[in-house]
Image (cartoon, rainbow, N blue to C red):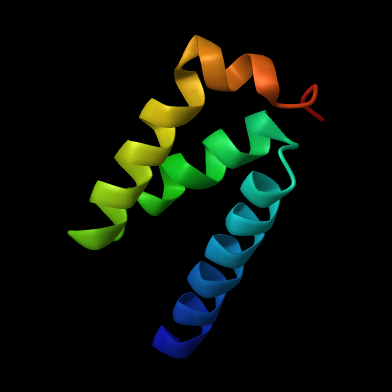
Length: 67
């Protein structure tokens, strides 16, 4: 069961990185960043920084419309 959860988190992180690299799906990236906050301590730090970065007006203007 733990392996399934780990694989799910890894796939979520990879898709989050893909969305951010292609500058699309801001809403989905925000949702994935919020879920990544469950992974204490590193996930919380990275998820919080991702949420902070995605909510800034300069960054949100650059991203394509959300899905």
